[in-house]
Amino acid sequence: MALYTSQSRDRVRDAVDFVELVSARTDLRRAGPSRYEGLCPFHDERSPSFGIDPVQKVYYCFGCQAAGDVFTFVQETEGVDFKGALELLAERTGVELEREQEDPREAELRRRKQRLLELLSRTVAYYERVLWDSEEAAGAREYLRGRGLGEEILRAFNVGYAPSAWDRVLGASLRAGYREGELLAAGVAQRSRENGRPYDRFRRRIMFPLADLRGHVLGFGARAIGDDQGPKYLNSSDNEIYHKGEHLYGAHLARSHAAKAGFALLCEGYTDVIALHQAGMREAVGLMGTALTERQLAELSRMAPTLLLALDADTAGQEAMLKAEAMLKTARLAARRKLELRVVRMPGGMDPADLLQREGVDAMRAAVDASVPFVRFEVERILARGDVGSPEGRDKIIERLRPVFELLQRGALQLELARLVAGRLSLSESLLEDLLSAPRRAGGPSAARSERPAADRREAEATGTRSNGGASLGGRRKVEHVFLALCIASPEAGAQALARLRPQDHLTEDLLRRAAEHLREGSLTEPMAGIDERDAELSRILAELVVEAGRQQAGEAMLRVCELQLELSHLERLIRAARSGGGEVVELARRREAVRAQLDSAQEEAMQQSGE
Image (tube, helix red, strand yellow):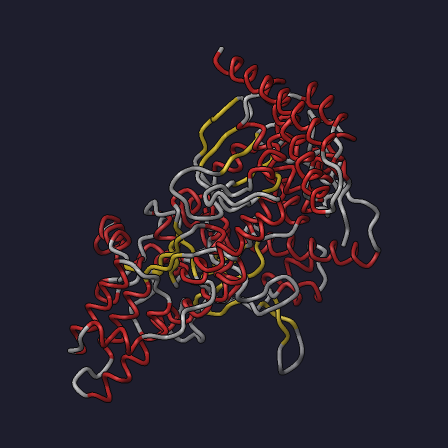
């Protein structure tokens, strides 16, 4: 894979406004000269544990331990690799990327992909001109007006029209210098089965461009304009750059709005998405068909923590919801994130565009506000379709409900749904609970409770301290982190303290020792500089230390306290080892008492400074 120069990466990093970038995902407030904090965009929480340093451009969450820099943040939120994150930020900031010397084959593939994207972009512009300027497209314009869609929003989505002639795109593209093979590869032309001649794939259709998250058009969804045409919808086939099931319609326009709102609104049709955006509901995205894929769910989970399904109230739409839940469980395991799934019940079998046109945006917003958890929707659906009048029918209902209830944690919703089912099936709640009981899912609440003490014990063994049951770090490990963070917060005093530090003696973790060596060899004013981009562990711990530094009150006295605490812990470990081996501890104990006296004095000085 071709790599970009380190100078290019540095220019992109310097150009990014990190506060603006992160604010698209969570609200931030200033919490110090070089610190902003807010609710973590990577896990659910009610009190802020997520912080960023806008100067060093790193983030760290003290709740879920998510950490990284500007590129990691884009990788995690946009679902791209490092190269993709760099390219996204380069486009955002207008920085031109310079490439390292690349393999000739890779260079050729890159140039070919760029040619295909340019060809598709030209084709989109052509279809747009035809829609708005040609007499033939009058019927298409009338249809779109009939769906309540205005020209402004249609232009925002680059909607166009493919004329009925068989070679308009083909001829214009060939004259512009594109080759026949490129038109076939981009999916805008196909060969005749009869004579092998190429012709325009899309004709006499309204064209909906399908774009990736960066707005690059990869293919088309095309709606027939005449009753004599089939199929009603014709989409681009899988090719070199377009792959069905990987993208969502309108996601490039919706993602920032969904991140701000905390939810994405998923519907089926292209016109549904456009109508919702026109009505100000810009969190809407669309399916490319009725079956959600795991990749689409992963993309949705990165956009927002909640997904609202506003699918048509017909059998196909409801089956798509069932597919969504099956895929959702896979996505949760893959991404280790929780995507809350809710159903928007569309009244009278209408789709969102119908509801907006007939009853207005208030009715659509009311439907969204009245959305229900997917499990409630599924429980009610199973009850409505089942035979509650016979023992055999009730047994089948319970069998179908069992996996649904496995999705629920104990709480008010579970209790309410259990009462609903018990009442409909004429069973006692205790009997229903027995019938629905099944082994708890791995990683459920009970498993988490049983695993936590073991994790605490392992942490205590690793750090030589007893777990306090509340802090995420053991006492000694916490001191080690704070010491290195204070070195960053007070660079001049920190450099002197690091020079005195003996990492093998004073630090108990290899990763912290590596971080200390990096800080000692580099610059405390630029602690993230010089890290190999492949060294994710070192990058993560340094991001944590930089954000922690923003939380600490810089001062030599507190730094000295931490330094003495590290020395005291080292001496205590030596004393324990000497006693277990039958060695002499008198001199070690004397040194320990001397350090304790220094520590008492340093703590008193630190308290006086903090009170000034």
